[in-house]
Image (cartoon, rainbow, N blue to C red; front, top):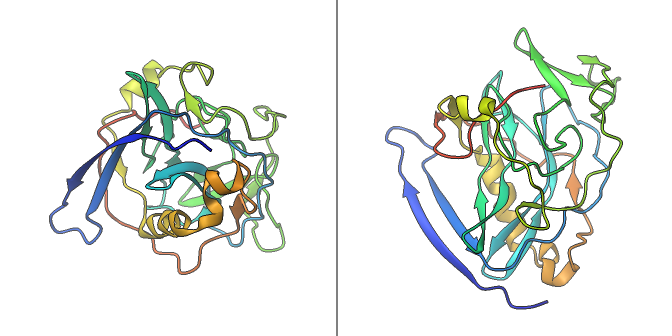
Length: 244
């Protein structure tokens, strides 16, 4: 695999009084990320976990795969908006994901399992409890009982394909709903998510240069020692969006 050149700009935001102060890394890469691999969603391990799809991160050794996983949300009532790569000014730039009341814009990337490019229909919040759409989500009904079945928005296409927005990728653009929701209160990735990504970045087998864009374990049930975050902050980019 070709050596990938990148310009990395690190912007550090220290949130006073919050234990989860974080560093946001803005990465401009000259080579497009590999396609999203096809994979089966593991079953939800326990009631209350939400699905977060896998994606390609970037580090000193190039692109690496962060497996999809079932995770605790940052707050009750929050949904996950996945991050995405977008082609801008001759580079592929990463736009990080976030938690919020609505699923926002994620570049039209087909992550699958309810994230088919616009919104999310793998489940919904009702009365402080998350209900899972069994038409999309892999649910063991013996352990998870808050379910329903709605096939009206089911996309038969499996996850996979273009992993970025831009030429020869997806052509989606933010809608007025995305733009209107941009100022909503959002939360950054939880500590568990950050640790999950950090572990993937250190795993040689997750590197695209090693697995040729086909990671052996593209998804997992759930990282150990879940750590939800209560931190919330207005999200500065990407925009909010609708929840299907």
